[in-house]
Each structure stands twice: as C-alpha cells, then as structure tokens.
Length: 287
Image (tube, rainbow, N blue to C red; front, side, top):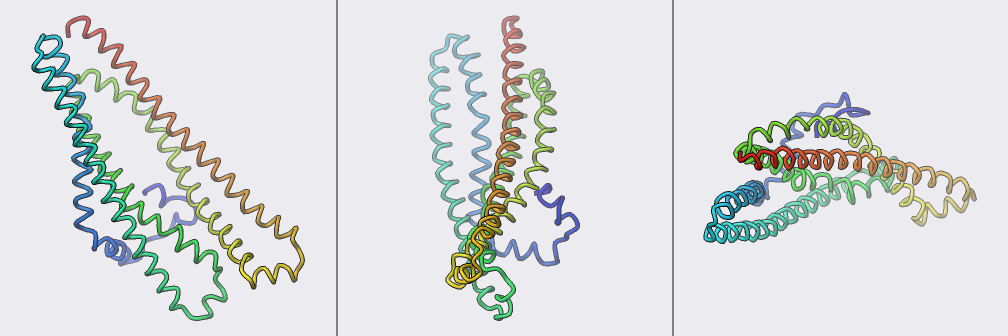
C-alpha cells in the first residue's frame, strides 16, 4: 500500500479530510464478520507452526526414545491440526467472500446512485466506458483491501512472529543462519514492489481506456458515427494501440511477478540446504 501511493501522478496527492472515515463506513456493517475473519487468520497462523514442533517430539522422544505411545499421540495431534486447519480454511473463505461481495454490492449501488443523480452536462463530457469500468472493475480494489490484503497482512505478521519463535525454540543457530539469507529476498521484493505498483496503475488506466473505446464504438450512436466518418483503418489503429499497451503492461507484470517468486523460492531452497547441511552435521555430532 505504501508503494502504491508513490510515483507517477499520485506522488504529491494527499488524502482529503474524512476520506478514511468514509472508507471505514463501508466496512461498518461487516465489523462482526471482520473480527471473526481476523481471529480465524490468527489461529491459522498459529497452527502453521505446530507441525514442525510435533515432528520434533515424534523424532526426539518417540523414534529415538523407542516410545510408541508418543509416536501415536503426536501423529494423531498432527492429523488433528490438519483437520482443524482445513475447517478454519472453509470458515475464512466464507467470511472473506461474504465481506468482499457485500462491499462490492454497497459500493456499486452507491456509485450507480451517485452517477444517476449527475446533471446531463456531466454525461456530455464523460466517457461512458470509464463509468462502466468504475462499476465493474475498480470497486474490486476495495474488496481486496478488506479481504486478501487484510488477511495477508495479519497472517504474515503473526506468522512471522510465531515462526521465528518456533525456529528459535528448535535451533537459534540455524535461525540466525537463515535470517542472513533474507537480503536475497528483501532487496528484489522492494524493487519489484515499486515496479508492480507503477505497472498496476498503468494496467488499470489502459484497461479503462480500452473499455471506454469499446463501449462507445459498440453503441448505436457510436457505431453510426464511425460509419459516417468511414475511417475503419484509423479506428483499428487506435484500438490496436490501446490493446497493445495492455498487452505490454501485462507481460511486464508477469515477468516482474515471476522475478519476485524466483527470489522467494531461491531463499527457501538455500535455507533448506543450510538447515539440512548444518543441522545434519550437528545431529551426527549428537547436538
């Protein structure tokens, strides 16, 4: 969100007074569901770090200690965690879809009522396609803010804290070694995040322009105007230019996203090699 507010035409823009209150007002009917949603996300983040600790008990106390009872109990605990996590996943999905679709409903009806109440002069200077784009696609950004963005932020924060605690409990030496690898991920993430923010703005703008052109040309009055002027080649070139811009931005977003995922998987692979290498040597030495 910080990167999305930087660069381009938004660099010097400030939120007007009352904007935050207006945004929060749309979520007010869903406060109960949002609280449940956040609670489920936090519990799932806690459950994510439980299996490694249970596996440690299976190996250290069960297998190496030749205790079948501990092996069975810990295995049942791992299965129980998986079942609970699956059930919570269904609850989370229901909450997120209910909140998101409810927000979209309220936003779309509010925008529709607002535009319907505008004077005729407004419609003479506003492209119909852009208005349709606002109703169809732009409001989805608000849905993501209260669902995927919210759950991702909460899950990442609590997941990071709990995972670090579990890693330190298992081996502080290997934890420090894994953290040394973080710059390999953090630096590309910052660079790619800035680029993706700019590309996302371009993609939304280009899609709006293309949608506006299609809506205008495919209406009766627009089609009649195009036929009267008799310039199909010029219309083709204009549409092709906008479609080409959408294509180029989409390719750039795909490659930047892939670069980000590559950095993430590389860190995971290197950290895994470190843990198995150093940890294996420590285990052989009885530590």
